[in-house]
Amino acid sequence: MSTCRNSAVPALYSGLTADPATRYLHARAKHLAEASSPNHGAPGTPGTRSALDNGLARPRRVTVNPTVQTAALTLTATGRAGERVTSTPVGLSVPVGTTGSASVTAGKSITLAVTSGRSAIWSGACSSNGGKTSSCTFTLNAAVSVTANVQ
Image (cartoon, rainbow, N blue to C red):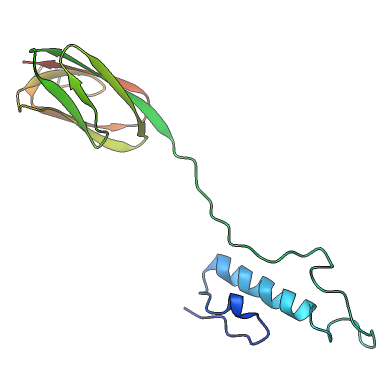
């Protein structure tokens, strides 16, 4: 990686790495430093307007936070009383006889399990096709519902 070491560039801009955004900032800072020097301008012109007077602003570092797509997970637990069904990594803990829901980042792998290790018959987005298993894993891409019939 190269580093910005131009003496005409203010100390604020020194030590920047050469990724594309930083190369742009380095070039912009160099331009501003040169444009604001007293010798910048047409030959024979005494003085010149600064870069800021010309409507150019000092470069700024901008942080972009992309929008995260989410989807609803609805979990219903039925069957054996006193048991719970949990979800990882979402953190739902649904007692048998109730329904819980959470907003989850789309594309996440979700694992549903009966807390006591008992088996359940899973239906909906995470189906066991009538078989009994203690957990069920699926990838959440859109709003889904799952029912766990705890045995």
